[in-house]
Length: 400
Ligand code: M6R
Image (cartoon, rainbow, N blue to C red; front, side):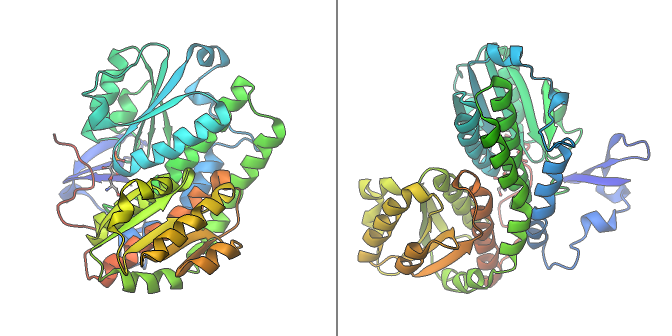
């Protein structure tokens, strides 16, 4: 059958009639193409390199012949939207970080207030939810227990629920009122990479769709952002071919025990994901925070050689980011900046510079996440860690 998903020793496959069935691992004849490493030395590497395809498939699946977004199957009409006065986005880990970008996109384009919450907090917090709430649950596996429990809680309180998941037939996809699938293909490595980028792209599509339904976006802006999105797979592809600098930085980071990831606006959300990724696969303690918070405490920890990854793709905030970098460097930090390839001033001030392809600032997070994933990957490999199966972690957290 067609391989869909592994969870512990249970495997989900599609049978000849395209029905979802669960089997024991031992019963499976693997779909070699989907489940093997395809020439890569790890699933994480393979999955990082599969991102152009995952993003493209997620986009293509949702575009009609005129290049407009079709989400008719989830049936959210203008009337439904008029009833909704807020959106919750609930998830764990990397899926939560995708949700933070989702909040950014929905508020920016669709102009609906969004609360993003971590599922294990949401379910015990007496959340402010009623029948005017749309609650979105993001989960690669569709099986994460806290996210599933949060979904049940939201339903009970009368919210309309929407799942964004990668696994057909998963518990979350079955229990949500509406579901959209990311087209990342099976994600095997514990560290999530391609699921994240496809979730983020899905959020952009959803937010543009909502914006259009509500009549709060001009046709020019809609088309401009759509063409930015359509150009993303090619740009990721290009950026994946210039990771030499990232490899070099990884060999410097491997001997460090701690570091920081900072950014402003959209960059801060990517900083959170970069920090999680390197903790998870490289066992280096890092913390992410908004750059403006530096002088409210954390700068006390900066010493000679402390690595600080500065995400700086937001051009309107560039002067602020550059002055943060100067403050950091004055205290001895080793600054690794990630920004658009033409950001000359950033290049000049940083110790190391990792370029990403030019894009509109509104979508640059989909590109800047690639080098932070790669940095975590190469640092893990440089430390001799089993990058696909870092210690103490499971692919899906399905127990309390
Ligand atoms: O399957 P899910 O998306 O619900 O999983 C959520 C988190 O457990 C997951 O993203 C986790 O944080 C990853 N290991 C991060 O790389």
